[in-house]
Structure formats: structure tokens, C-alpha cells
Length: 212
Image 1 (cartoon, rainbow, N blue to C red):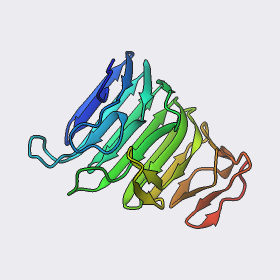
Image 2 (image 1 turned 60 degrees about the horizontal axis):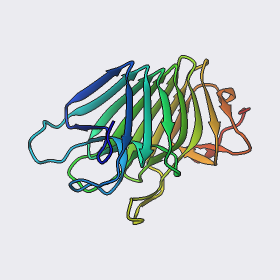
Image 3 (image 1 turned 60 degrees about the vertical axis):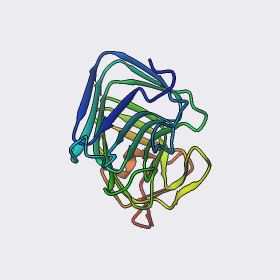
Image 4 (image 1 turned 45 degrees about the vertical axis):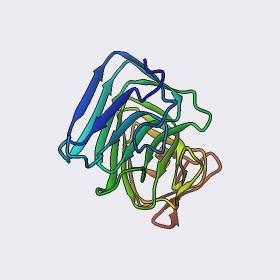
């Protein structure tokens, strides 16, 4: 359990795997150049103490509880996040599942791949206007939420006002329930896997038809 900093911090070409354990984080202080509060931070500082490359965070089973800020935050690096049967609890009022955007470091791209396997996801995913996200929902996974590019940091300063490049794949056993109108670059899967909930999913500017 962390009471001040992130619960997990990964820099550069490094990885963390958690199996059937419990992690609780309450990030109440922004450390270094950080402009966000988050529970799992994946970044590259360009300080030279960590090789640049793809970072990875994998969690199988167990629980991850975030009491402050975003559950996952990716900045200035390429990251792969894989979740398999994890119980996620977000007690922060903004309910941000993942943010991929500029922060206090520069020199590399903001890129993330989120792979959900037998996983329940809830909340908003933030993708900055210069960021990229690949979201894969597989093996009975569900995502209830929206993807947005309207991002403010912990000081209330605007970081982005439009969504970047977003590719979403939903397999036949998984679902996405919208909680707001959402714009993505590409969508792979059956439109019937998307539960509109009164909202619209726009793919490359065109409303997706055939949703539930």
C-alpha cells in the first residue's frame, strides 16, 4: 500500500508483473516533474538511468484499488498494460481508468496498448491529441465508459482538448457499454458488441450503426 506516491512506477524499458496480490495506492503528492496523480505510472524521464523502449505492466487476478487520481497513467513512452481477471476499484471522484498524454517530461511519444482478458473495466479513458491508444477487449471482457481527449492536469491546466489516435478491438465474447458519445480512429469487431446506452460511437467521423 502507498500513502503518498504511486503504487507502481515503471520507467523506460522495464516491466512489472503482479500475480494474485492486492495493491492499494493513494497518490497525494506529485513527485519530480509529475503533473498528474495516479496509482500506476509508466513513463520515460530521459535522465539516462533507464533505457528507452516499451514498458509493460501485467496483472493477473488480485485487486488494484486507486484512492487518488488516475488508475493508470502513461506519458513520454510506449507501454503495454495487460489485465487478466483483476478486480479494479477506483475511489477517485473523476473515475479515470487510464490517461495517455503529455506530462512534465518530453522527448518521446505517448503510446499505450491496453489488453483486457476476462476483465471488467469501468471509467473514462483519456487520450491526448498527440497520443495513441490501442484497446483490446478479449475473452469475456467488458468496458463501461468513454474515451475522451479533454484533459486537465492536477492543477486544472488544459493538457489536451481533442482525442488522439484510438484503435479499439472487441471480440465476440466481449462488450463495450458507452457512457458518452465517443470518437475513435478505428474499430474492429461486431457493432452488436457495443451497447450504445443512448450514446453514439463515431469511427473515423462516422456514426457506427448496428449497435445495441
